[in-house]
Length: 112
Image 1: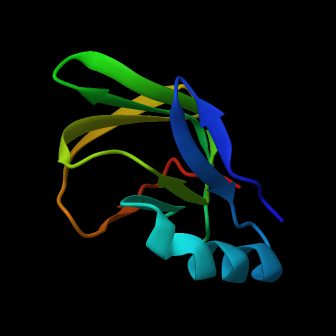
Image 2 (image 1 turned 45 degrees about the horizontal axis):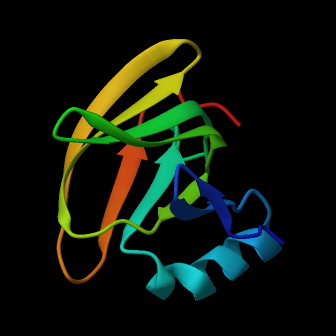
């Protein structure tokens, strides 16, 4: 099963490719305020080459081989998220409140 990892002082859980891993990740979702699910246009799960979170221009964390489930422990605030798929970067803005924020990131570039 995926383990909680830490990069740049930020804890995260990454993985979920198989049914057992996906179930495990879903069971732990309540521990992580920011959650991503990466998928392709056909609904298949995907993996980003790298996901980088920034807050106010400052890089908070950068995670390689992210997905299909990525869950991150970050404080409330507004973040810019960049995900790279097959060398092409895509960006989204996300607000994290006191609850949980989930981003369903669907792109034709996602691959597994």
